[in-house]
Image (cartoon, rainbow, N blue to C red):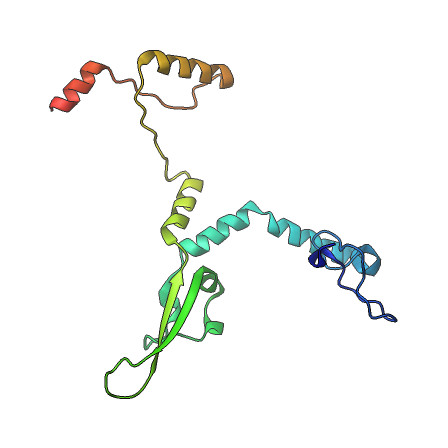
Length: 179
């Protein structure tokens, strides 16, 4: 059995770890307290938080709205990590600290800190799509017969057209190209 799924309780006399599986979302088996109402409630909360679609949306929002200025103090120096807001700390993908001599000839080495955030535009795109603020359109070139067949098949499946189709005749194309 995977150690991560095993009960974390230990026997008081043998000091050996329990060999049973922990309850879902919990750290102990039913025998070692997994049946207690408060333990089951907490395990349920963990599982709901794990698969909560709203949580994924909140995480994307944290990344999309993160502001790198929150890690700097009033003098422009990087604050200690423990002082960063949790939302910003979650938005950081990497921190690279390098010692360099920034002023030639002074013999001192200063820290150069590079902080990279997760991709902000892609998270904004996810939010826009979720809120229906961004609609992607597909432009397709096909003859009228194929489009009619696609639309009739779509209507048979859903009793209403799910896609918006604008049919442009060859004459309209020629007029659009000449203007």
